[in-house]
Length: 130
Image (tube, rainbow, N blue to C red; front, side):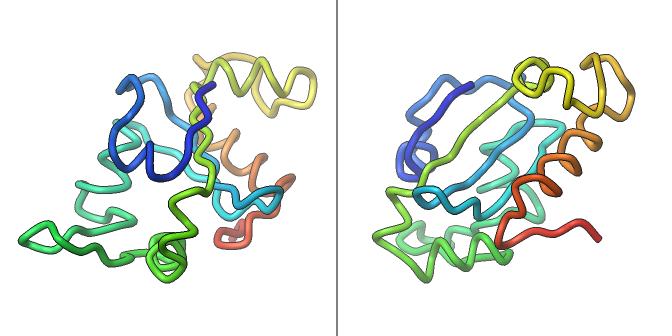
């Protein structure tokens, strides 16, 4: 598990580990968002086709491209201090213990099951189970 400020995350101030698959965004005790990425979480946030935040062509500004992305941009600079928690599937399963919806990261649907479970338990402000 890795916990860092949103600014540290945005600036890439952590080991870029493709094993991180689950991310939780918090403002103090308030859970704002729970998400997953099957590839790279940083790319999911900033460079993927449907990223949460898009940088302008000249790189001097950003805009929100999702509800959580918009919340971050609208709450700058305070949102730079929000917390981003990065977890691997295995870490999440271990931390949840008997409550985990799957017992192994090798479950074909582990990531989706973990995301749905965390959303139902943490009730993030910007993401609900549909």
